[in-house]
Length: 424
Image (tube, rainbow, N blue to C red):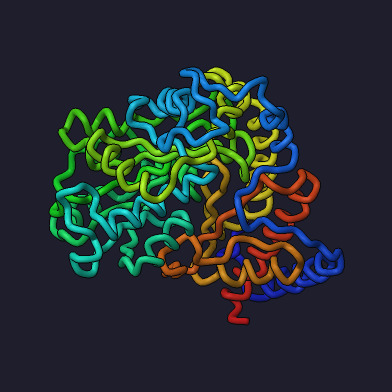
């Protein structure tokens, strides 16, 4: 029965019963951290062989990667990411283990030097702004906040950001310089942008000539089921058609393909953007870890090899998503007190509690030994205006531990909701 259909006495009786169950959970002494979307230990074992010593250290063009070599990445790695992302290899920059680092550096270059040689640095143009589809990725928001860039939340819809709002804002404000996007299996909603949304990003007029789309395609191959997966339209191709090819920076990495702390990352962009980035990057560094790039390319020589690895990840990850979704459907759905997304890929389940309950739910879970992503973290400045969204990260715990954690989570959702209804 839905909470809204219960009388106050029945609600209070249920609350008292749930409080006893909660006391039982606290006595278990749980210590589970589900605050980040981390691969599980079993996933890290999939590619253990990648870091064995290579037979030799010579990449395909004869370069010895033990020495100083390519600032933009070895040819094999550039080609691998080009094939994954559907872009020219000559416009791919391959970096270290973190695509977030590439994003930070890209914002920093634009802020200090401008997006192209003839563009004024963002820092000299006044109080610049970024659009932030929300709920979104907290580390994106942290980057813009660190540069004191004003963040403007944009609601997420079922097929991507609210493009009516995006188009209106960028067309009328020259100080809006960028937008953060996780276009495939988005963090945290698990939404893949529709073809229409991608085309609108490519075609929309912008008041700022130096406006940039930061296209963080972190989950481009991270499906849960190879037979039921999403596909994302190639934004670079669409931008080329519209003559806006300088508009987009595309990012990806192997962080959740091989090993999260020892992968390789990539950034691809137009020829003009690429040449400017390489010029400035050549001052910043001599080269990234090209030996690690070679290791990866020996282990993952092509997209087919990547697909084989991702199928192994999916076999581990999908059952964990199902544990959470089954629990929500059995324990929460009958009461009509929340909604959530059912993603086909990525690393998160986005949960929306009753307004005003998210912080309380997270606090109840923490008190009983399960740490979740902080309520509000999925919005700019940590401010969820509805205090509703919670990012569930099911991948890291074992299935046994996850079962305990999601049972506690469902209990906390019911408790927090009843507290609100009863005014406790």
